[in-house]
Image: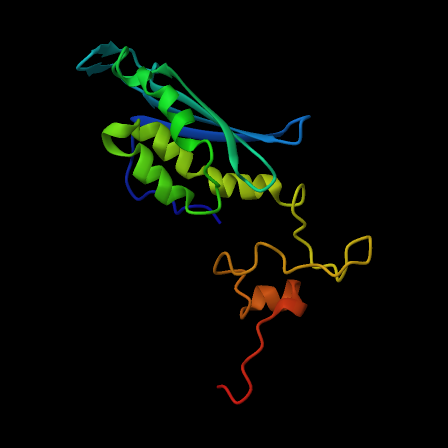
Length: 194
């Protein structure tokens, strides 16, 4: 289902594009390469000077290298286009200093905000970093982590509860999707409970 048809005529003025690619590396680590652009469709005058239509106001990259437990072992930021050259593009090294050692699934967004929000970082790079935990989960699903409900793995060892259960409204263990697709993990009502 798509969004509804707009009720008024519209004119595109700005496009923000965000892309994330996840790469399995030969050394067992993973790279999450994130990219954000902001582009106006008309000529724009910034405090730092004019920008022609179609020229990125922001063209920023962030790479996090993670291990199989989603610990950040390396980070790199790069700024190809910024509104204030010589100023915006000087913060990149701080992303490595502040992000290495964090875990994407253990308080990452809180720590990111503590370490790189406001004047401690770049608003756009920090915003880009916020989407990487769920991007990593999608990358690891069925590649690093099994998402099916097989009773046992190939070696006969009983499986643990699939990682994605109770992580969103559709996959709540007391809901219909889990009852249909993961029946052995359905939450049972407590004895005597309503």
